[in-house]
Amino acid sequence: ARDGNFGDDLNAWLWPRLFPGPPDEDGRRLIGIGSILDARYSTLPGTKIVFGSGARSPVTAPKLDTSWDVRFVRGPLTAAALELDPSAAVTDGAAALVCLQLPRVDRTPEVGFMPHYRTLAVTDWEKICGKSAIRFIDPTRPVTEVLGAIGAVDRLITEAMHGAIVADLFRVPWLRVRCHGMHYEGPDVSEFKWSDWGYSLGVDVVAEAFVTIALPPRSPLKRAAASPFHTLRQSMIGPALRRVANSRRFHLSHPSTLGRAIERIDAHVQQLKSEIDASAGTQ
Image (cartoon, rainbow, N blue to C red):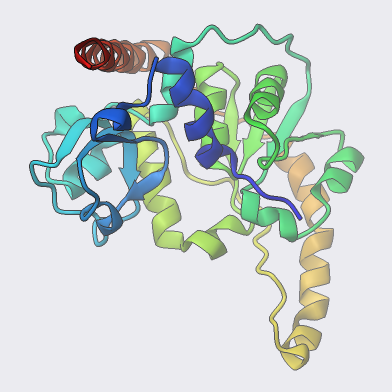
């Protein structure tokens, strides 16, 4: 069984490398990468530091009070949902990766494909990618492995939003597709989070036409009825991947737009570091 999810796993990997000590040691809780801003955080004790997080939707966004310390959010849709000034929108917190000295990766002329982690159950992606001369990037693998794989390809086809976010940071052209992940997240959540991030950097996040597949129904009778359609859709994946790999719609944000966002995130990182240092010095 696979476990792990690249976007979520970035939190445990990134923040300890950026900050000398966990902010929650002094009653503060860092809320970082992900579509995680909802009511579940409202009752948590202490100060909640929002560092590039996103809302799942305007309907589930929390009502902010004095316990929230919002440094920046993922994009303008989240800022609006939280009734914040538009200037609170910078970009996804994963962009703080550029504040680290990441090892240089040699790029190859390969096209990579990174599915949503829930899409792994749909088919044997590694086999399909192998037959299509496309590099399969497993979103459940360790963070360092996934970062290296994204940085090593020439272009990235991705269903995982943080695949696109990291590719854009690494200046690897990317293209979004939808296969199964939207069935798990819900189309509204999926479109909201992609649009939120896309607006933050002025990039086109409209998904390229692809093969959408739901898992077979649990009922044996319904599964039997759906089986021919499921098999047909699976047979379409390889040709669809090869077609998308030849698309001219791969994207990158404008360097100046990304540069401005990175400058703002770096300033927030340095500010929080200084606060943590000062707090540690008074203890």
